[in-house]
Length: 335
Image 1 (tube, rainbow, N blue to C red):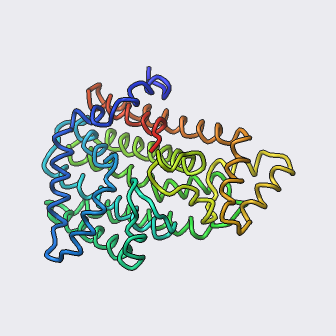
Image 2 (image 1 turned 90 degrees about the vertical axis):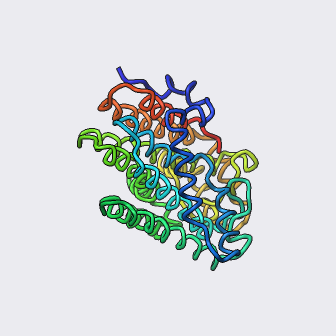
Image 3 (image 1 turned 120 degrees about the vertical axis):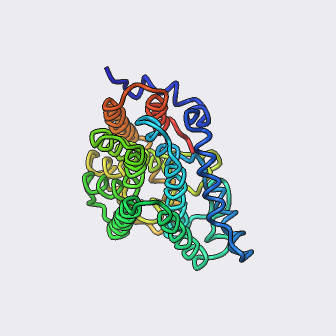
């Protein structure tokens, strides 16, 4: 019988270093490749890269790729390269997201755009993406490059969809899930698939790990959106309230607008449309007084349960157990 998210939460409370134990040396090997790839003879570029190295944070994506490989068989040198690649792509999206969101704080450090402006931030994100594909070109086959490129296209589609739907108070839950599946979950899904493919896993396991990553990615983004409404900036370590400020409807807001009576719905609509810089506080107050936070949390839990169920295609192992705990960590995280 598969474990449910609540059963996994004690494991999720462990430090990530413990969850990553089956691939700890591999995570470090990929980090070394990441650092070496970004060495530049231009000092100011090296300074920019050293700054964004602080954005590594949880290293969830490279660790997931490496754990997927270990759960299917062996971790190979190609996996170390791929783990560095997906982390570069991820950090590039963070740098670009901070520009789009006009964010000031990331991982308790000032964002690139705050310190050096939007031009350098956009170009640095592009620089990271170009190096990711440079690393991909070092692999013996082009399969990973094609998969990463397709995923990057999907991420951009999701971001464009999100910008298109700003201030759209009629956004449906299905549309929201489509957006976050593209902009967030697609990268995590490709991590699971690449880990399995380059371990020589059968198609069933490749598909299972892709589905695992996709489900974890959706749960991750729902939780992230909840933290943007309910978190503490000092604890979360990044600018909060940016979704409301940029007119992005997330799942708690969508549920509130769909489920509440006319009066509270009108108050939320007025707050969302207000030009007041403090409208975030009013939105957060209204949402906290409803059951919309619990609704979104339940949705994230269902996606984690789906992720854990997908792992039943894999044989029992320490790596599979770590993946299960990683999924539950997504629900328990506060940063």
